[in-house]
Picture: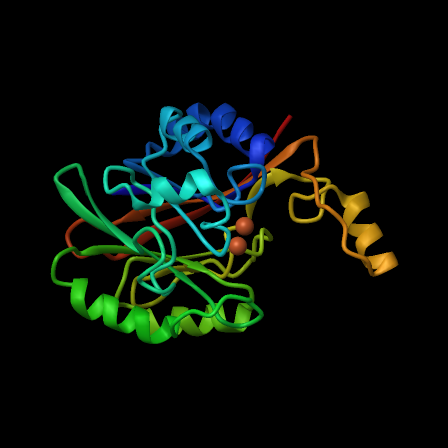
Length: 261
Ligand SMILES: [Fe+2]
Ligand SMILES: [Fe+2]
């Protein structure tokens, strides 16, 4: 099983760049399953029918989320629709829209993807992601050999700790949220692919996808500023993972870092 996973896709520049580069990446990596983190799809905050349709039409099979998953009114309906392959972090309160995991059938093989959000330096009040991970894996490991986690968190220490907790129990931990790719991707001895953060699909000359002059004004003048997305060439940060169908172990893990003009 080959899986292509894109870090946070940010607004129109991110969507257009993913659409543009997908044919080339499909040709090169031959993925059976394409996943994007979509918490920033709709102008940087949340997701919408239009933006998710664009991604599904381009060949994306599943959209994961994060702390921005609930920030677009239109997106809330999508999260609640069981027909749409869109998930949000599992450890938000259960009375919030959407679901935290999904089981997909890919080439007669089941794949489970679940999503968790961190607690360190994050504003939302969520359940303990470590306990949630333990419980989820305990309940689901018998129903699929291939389990993938989109681990949406800010602190690298918290992210690495999660990797240690689930090491050898699931196929992969793909970190998201910071929009900055880390250099620690590896396949552990126990066969789990891990990276603290995949990065983003957003404008390169920006501050995590946002127009840099606005962010600089915000820091220099210490005043709230309305953020706008940057425009320009887009960096595509993604990973390609090959998993052994027989036992769910990661066998090949490659980083993708491309520039789309
Ligand atoms: Fe994000
Ligand atoms: Fe986020």
